[in-house]
View 1: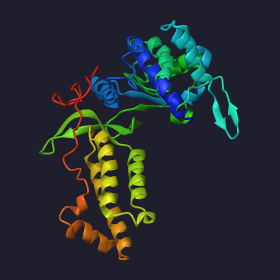
View 2 (view 1 turned 90 degrees about the vertical axis):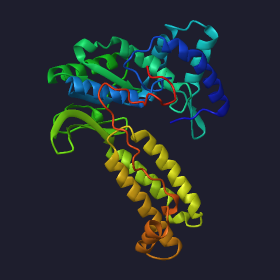
View 3 (view 1 turned 120 degrees about the horizontal axis):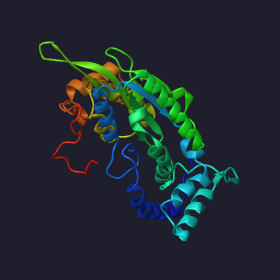
View 4 (view 1 turned 180 degrees about the vertical axis):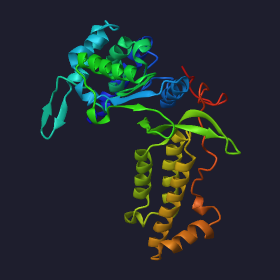
Length: 342
């Protein structure tokens, strides 16, 4: 990952402001990543709706080294389909040819858009729009693309296999390829396997009534193992022994800031169990931290955090923060502020 200097990022941001509305007018409905007015949860809602329709054969994959592999010449051809201003085109070429400092030398590859660049996500979408507009949803299933992460929801195994072949064919024509380790076909069945997409694990489950009665099948989602592990790793870093000289209230504030942001994303899912685990983990880590500060045991720290403190040192509570998604219903609250959903 290469990060341009500040002045380059400023110029890239200005170019993005000028270019984005031009390409937004053409971008397809299947594209969700790095687009104004769209969010990851919009893409996740499509998965839920398609599964509810019966499209439960899933092609799960992503593009190998997408940002690094986009050919510069073909990318500029895609830009020139909508932009004719020579000065702006020359500026974009300079962005692409800027190169990457490696040691004391500059490497100037003929492929790739700097992944740390402000304008790179837009350029990625511009190039992959060629995939989006070539995709025949009626034949190959519903494509959902979030930048270089792809999912196709299909009605049958045959359609899913054909979709995977078509993905390889179209991406091959763009000079790109799928990542073999992350490419597979999953059949969503009750008590069967699931798949990961955008930080969530998705699995077909059957709802149950209050009396234990069985109800409809639906695609549930909760934080993936990787997402939960990432949260635990970050909380462990914030409460590490190396930070024993940091005041407890500062530690709590930093932990709360991270957990609040993490839970803010994953609350739109069936995440109650995962939230319980993270909430318990934060208290256990703070108990260990306080125990070390006072040269006492973890059990002593647990008693101090959970029982002696009336508000558990101000640690965030995640109870009641989950909003389970429903098929064919907007995931955003009707009264919620923010950008409109497209």
